[in-house]
Image 1 (tube, rainbow over the protein chains, first blue to last red):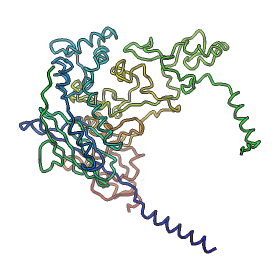
Image 2: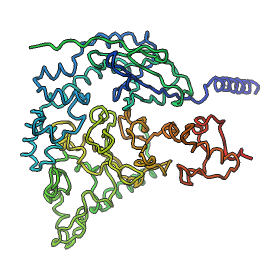
Image 3: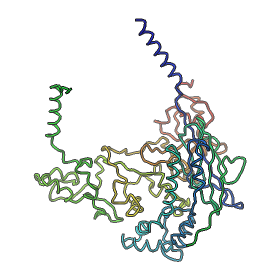
Image 4: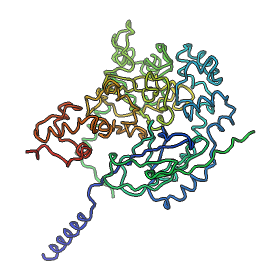
Length: 254
Length: 297
């Protein structure tokens, strides 16, 4: 009778020890990102709008292979891509005007379909849409459905292919957010630990490509109310992560 | 060794099979989940439908031949075949009246798959056609439903303008967005905590009219609609509503609560929320210790 009682108390003791070692309920943190950049030395600092940033678990050292892959990328700029596929100067200008990676990023106004500011690719697609839909307004609004795939979003898709390969290397726990018009974004529900903040694909900024790869510590209970994590391409005492700039390569001519 | 099945179990099995086999099929309800209804969508749904006038769309039920090919006996059963009531508001051979497509009274059989993150990448750029704010992004799909809430898309107009024929999922690939689910009744009104917030408000200068992702901070990472919440942190409000020299709306109400545990926070909330304990985030932003109503003397 004595033996089972001993076993029972031993088990009880072990369970108590295990429960005592269990960490308290996991507290998540928030990283408030603020990206402020200068296109060149004479330009004012401005928020980098609508750019995607990633938070990869681990230290820079632990993510060395990924960072090497990011830095090794032979990137083609948007202008070079569109020049290569034979896009018109008007289309290249239209995309550049709003920093667009594809034709989806802004509405195609009537002035870009006909008249002196018309983009030839849009004019052709508009004519095809008029024929297909029999309605001028639908034809304009649905114009992208009659654009060639490369013109429509070939550049965006090529970037996505690169991005997907890098993300695969980064593992399944990569967080991602996009900055708003002021260059602010929030990474939420972060487990405490070390992360690498990266844009994975260099950002075109004026005549340069900028890459950010910095180590970030997230503590439990970090809140969005705290000071933002400032990111820039210029050094400053408040800037926590300074991007590495490389000049954009000259477009290859056929 | 063979396992012996008890007589009781055999009887129960027989009963279940009998019910399954002899229970009459309810032809008043069409289920996409029925195995024979799971052919390619365009077997029955032809796009565009004849009644789509403003843009090519699917706005009507399939033609009779989609049903008759299998359901001839049910189609010609009596003067008022019940199967007609799936689409027709009157079951009579002389009446063609149909319910609105889709019938709002019936349960939804599909959920929508929509990755906000991808769409943010490609469409939610500053646009220059917005009347005053010189940007235009989420409003491509979310127009104003009321002064308080934005609407979710109710038709294909904001999908087909890009996904009509070339960009997948295209209009004929229904399954690209519509995923078969257990039939459900959708919520008519979204749950809102700060019911008094007005998207178009913010004083004379309409300062609430900001870029949507400035407040809805998790939208750009949302790959699915599953579990998607509006996710507006209190900091989005207190940047203006609890700032020295501007306004002290949060502090004022928390101070009122200090002296009256039954105080209802009304500046942002309706009583159902305003009578609850203020969440930790509210106290934290106001640099106050956590507060429970029951602890107030």
